[in-house]
Length: 82
Image (cartoon, rainbow, N blue to C red; front, side):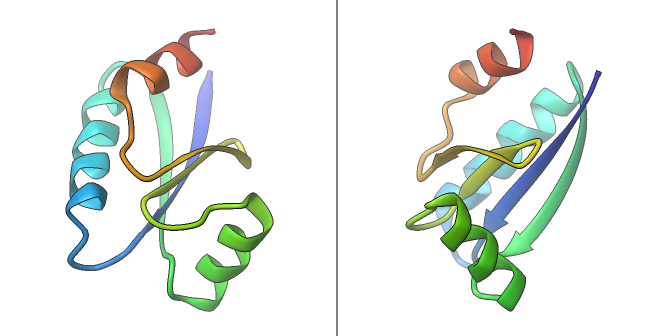
């Protein structure tokens, strides 16, 4: 199964860098399509507002809000395995 991950990010954001590393690692174990969108772009602001994402990094799985802030690799792996 392929999962579409929407990843809202911001420049100079250490939590975004950590989330990107986590997503890259999990992409080896799961079939992920990752759309990285700057949260300060018009599209990013729209997605963040509709998903209730308060600050980056924001992650949506197949359009459903998953998390924002520090991304838990264990929590994401569990969500993708269910």
